[in-house]
Length: 485
Image (cartoon, rainbow, N blue to C red; front, side):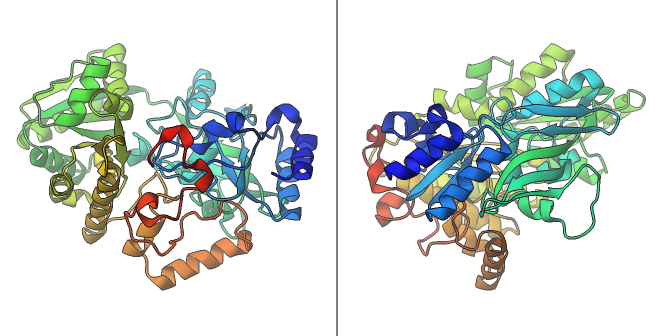
């Protein structure tokens, strides 16, 4: 990096918060996905004004930059592909206000998701969006990806719970999109920004809508001897007009890993499990719980268990939230997708997933948001074995193609980023993509802010950077930890 530019960054954020050596920036070459690339540098501003100053310094030198939160993303969205610096929001981690009467919180983007609900809990409130990584992921990243979570079926994803966002634009201006009221005049620019994956600017504050904690919650575990029966129960529950707070599914391979990891008492001989939360007022809740249990039995559940107390309920959900990490017990590596399909297509789609695994000679575990059809197939592979990574990518591409063919989408909450950008033509026409690009250019005309994300590069969907010998991998990272991808 240019010495004068490095000095300029240090003058803004201080030497301690301007990282330039390979040892300092190494950890920023990764996120939770499979892409890898070292940034030129990493800066950690401590305020909105410092973020704006760093962005203006980048503009003056025609330097590209990538916003980054906790790095838990699963699509390469926070990786600085090519010659770019990372602007980390890790130091912007304050909860500035909990306004209980108006049920809002004002937070900085580096605040951990779970910490918002912890701060709101004494007021009888919570922040509903709850990704499985909620103990580590941050609000800024949730906004960038429009993250969902276990309870998005009943309450909606991040966009339904963000009223306003303070941003630094790609040219260094500071603006508010939305505010503290439910609606503001003019275009819904906050809605445009949420889910834009850091390509329209950098969030530095957010106004979050808080919700009352339910008076009571009951958790059911439906145990099935076939995935078809379990998925049929999902559609039947919603078809009866019952919308659970959460409705999740795990197959046998996922359950075996989770049980070995957490010891939640899950039956490892079952083909599929449904984990269901019923929330609401105490009066009448038992009737809904009984109705859901009856539907499960009607659709072939061999057993329906109801958590007897809070600790048992928490243990069941700990198992679900630990599912991705538990894969380490059965495979050295995994590649996760998050396509979405209509609920009615779940039985056929799970057969498509199994077929992709068979075709490419890989095991695939399924653990997902069954209630809204948001799949999370975990494609298991070993990066040390020649060709397995490329086969995993190819299996993922087959799954996404099947999702689109069945009336779905290539992403529900993980985003497009680097990973799925060349799959975008599966779902969108050239005219669609051109329209999106024009919108991005209104904010980010020079493609300086998070470049190379979302939009196709011309490579084939599922083609790895190693196979293409171009794309996501910077040549400077070829020897990074000796990794082959």
